[in-house]
Image 1 (cartoon, rainbow, N blue to C red):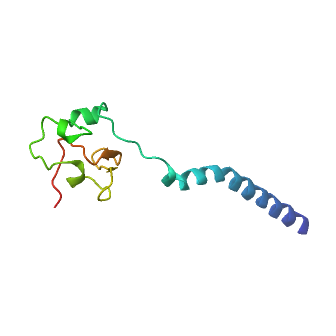
Image 2 (image 1 turned 90 degrees about the vertical axis):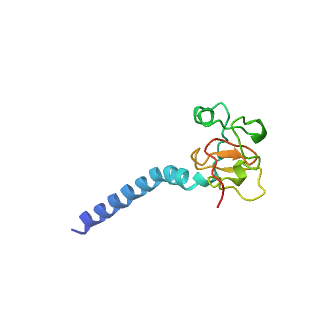
Image 3 (image 1 turned 180 degrees about the vertical axis):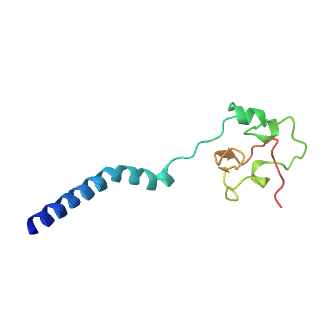
Length: 108
């Protein structure tokens, strides 16, 4: 009986070790997700084109308010004074702080 429990423990140890080694690359990829670069929105992307996004707000023909820029938009979550930041309209992709699109909503 001692012989069987020894073999069982060894087999269990080997199975757990193999599973752990196989899971390491997956865990590393999941945990290092924050280190990945964030994409920047291009004016030629379909969503950007549909919303009239311009990286330079002065070139946006639909803009009525001269103070309306991405940095003054409620959907922009970049740091104050940053040159770009994530926008919730574009799925968190970076937009130019001096840009503009038709989804602009004044910060409250």
